[in-house]
Length: 539
Image 1 (cartoon, rainbow, N blue to C red):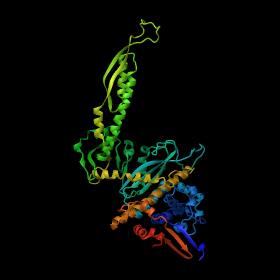
Image 2: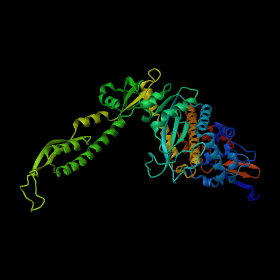
Image 3: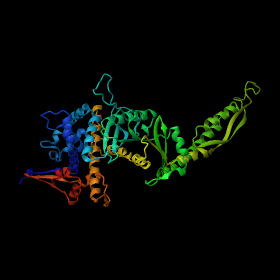
Image 4: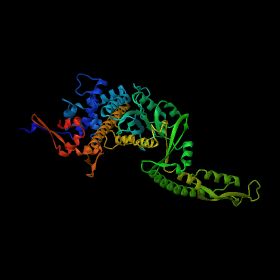
């Protein structure tokens, strides 16, 4: 047999990714929604599937190296008959991104996500909303004469969650289910937009596409009088900004004995009913042991730092001279008012004879005051202010318009808010340095927005695969070994991907088989189902 008759191609974990995509019905859905040409070798759905395989390859391969990513991989096996690496060039990928944008990114993503959620049995009783910024390299300056339809996003400077104020950015709004952190909604917005200005509008838009009654959970950016009034007819749960005067009073005035322990270790709560912005609601004061310890440690550092700053400012003030005692006292009071945890004590005004500016200056000039004044004092801690902050330490407030505790108990409120980390985990995933869009490289705002939507699809595929695996392990009461060789029922899908390194599709003449598919890998695939097993020739 000639060596030319033997082919070895990589599958690795790509068969798992491809299987989840197939189970979602993604390719067929996209082919129905996007333009197709009978002469196209790669359909729009297959092109997006290829992008997701690239994105979840964790090798940081940008689109201009897209074709190279598939060199040596079992491309035809993963994507479809007749598809080779050279068909997956940057021109084809760019055109598909343009088509995605023209169809409408958010509506298309919701359609895909809700269809997938139904197929995988994802519960949609609660949905968590958050946003984050993604920085880009380049100027992204649009000529004033340029008009794009539909309008592209504005890639510009804004508040950076990545602390990269020097770079332009765009914003991604994400809603995830409380069940498995599955992304159900994604929107790409302008780099300088405000969460508070758009959150209520996003929830209403998403609700219009749903046929179920979900509890919408968001951080304090949602909680404003205008937003709450705009959410009429929706069930919501939000954190209350601690800067609101009623919230400050509630955090400070709630006595310790009003807080009762919960089934969640380290948390105590106290519930109240009332109204804000004309909306009847329940408030839940929550005290967290872990947060309290952190807050008190931070408070001690702030007090020490402010003490040093205050002493320096007082020394500077004491060297100043004033024309009258009233001016000296006013300056002391002004300085005192700038401190949060300290105040001036034993404030006295000291008189000083006015020194002549020059030795030849007359000493009997009646127009000059005979005295000038300075301030002497000491800096002490403001016990009342510190006691107030100490009482507030570890506390925050949750609010909801679900008034019936039988429908949403106090502990359920806390659990749902803690599940808000689902969107935060999603953003951490998207910003991973190994993710292929960790730094966006495209030069068209339209394509940047479309690629962000593909990023969301990668997160959707990953989350569905991880949820499916964990659910199967839990139901069968079995486990897999984690990185430390210890049994777990909640492995990360990334670890599973690593377990499938060096799995190859080998062709010898007319015979094709998968090699390096160890017993452990076959055991894992049993929990992922037939759609994934197919790519490893197990079904």
